[in-house]
Image (cartoon, rainbow, N blue to C red; front, side, top):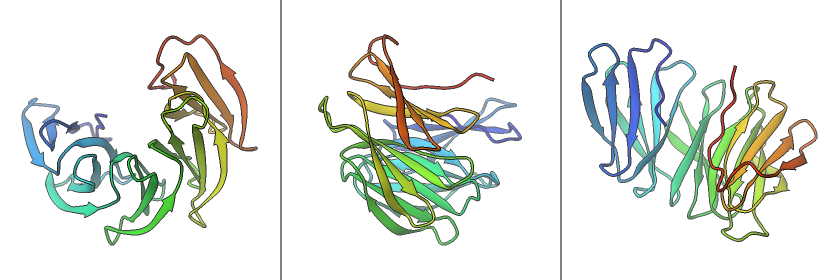
Length: 220
């Protein structure tokens, strides 16, 4: 991912192979490298724009960058294989999906410490939070074709309240602009699952979207 601040002054690029975040000045196109830990993978910027959080897949940690100074603040140990990351709309909590351990770590953005670890499904590749901040979805790929799932987390109680069936190779997801549907690409098939968020049920499976669908996005 390549988040850009609302001001557009800088773009942040996670560099997996070098274990760093590259900061691009969008006026001069100069690049500055900020060392993180091994396997910098996914990025998320706080709603206020003051910090960038990056998951370090090989370093079992999350690094925090100050966007005013473009300096590393700290690196927070989490569980093994952190990949997906999402921040609540209030900016209070950071949700991290840990692929290897099958967990979600919740980081307090004020203290920059892990306050809770939630067991979800096997290999949670992605994590998403609704715009109202009430629910988080962990997309789990068991690497089989029959037992993949989507774990639904209540962000108030910080517990899994439901587990929905996933498709073969459930991988990355996207919530539509109306915030009432979650779409999940099934990377080991040719389908996309659609979840109704108000009822927390699977509405349908869309066939024939092409081989190995991974990422999703919505147009304006």
